[in-house]
Amino acid sequence: MMAETGASGPRLAELLALGRRLWDELEASTEPSSGAPAVQDKVRQGLDALQRATAMVAQLELFSENEELEEVASADLKYMLLPALLGALTLKQVDLSRRREHLESAREHFLRFLKLCRNYGLGSFQLPPGISSEEETGSPSAPRDPAQPNLVAMAMSRTAKIERYKQKKELENKLASMSSFVESGTADEDQIREFYILQIQKWIGTSLEEVESIDQELVILRSRDAARQASAGPRGPSRSARIPMKPFILTRDAAQARVFGAGYPGLPTMTVDDWYEQRRRQGVVSSAHRVPAGASDEELQKQQQETEEEKDDEEALQKARDWDDWKDTHPRGYGNRHNMG
Image (cartoon, rainbow, N blue to C red; front, side, top):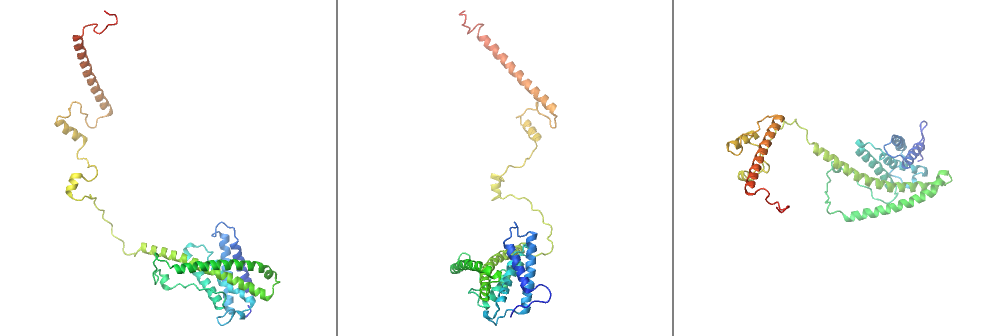
């Protein structure tokens, strides 16, 4: 059934063309950040146009599970791309607080597109698994051992990626050679039909890659959310004030603590004045030169000067005594042999 147009408002073809044009501009954009206001405005405009076009396609019932690809009009084939374009534009949104919601929405759009292509026999591929309730809660039904990866599945996935890459390059070359004829209006119906089918096949490979990437990111986001919930814990009544613990010494036993100590210098048991007084009573230190506690700097300097003078007097007296003893045993001129006297 050919797409019908409404009496008022933009037509279905115009909405699809607007969404495609905005998508192409976003892909060729040179903006340094995808979160730039100009970029996000185009994303919102494109999503709005494609959502309105999708609603019109559903109202017109252009596609059905009970018909074959040959029954679809060539001009209507391009509307099969609507779910894929919606998924691609949904991924362009940069609201981090709704990132998981955007990923799940984009995944649904891509899966709806892949199911539609599968029903019409467009391409041979395996549909990605859906999101089960166990995966939503982050507890898979069959836990996998990360130490024993499925080597067969990894090899098959690698082979499928290589094959999809080769098909993508081949499809891009064919589309580049046919786009000028279709856009100029010189292509016949068979060429237009082949052109749209090639576009659909190209987006099949893109959708499979996007779904795989979305699944990997969703695993990370679910793990992050589960970790946050676990760290938050149940919010019960407020906890009572915590009583501070007394410090204690980690030693094997009391005997070891007495012999080896606590492992650090002990605390002082007396003041300097008490120690000085104890030493004075023991006769080790004389009390003549004891500096009183709380003495000023001038008193300390005066006391130090007196001590040095007394020390100098004792040295001078001893030197004079030694000199007298030497003169008693050595007459005047002893040792002077310069004049041979």
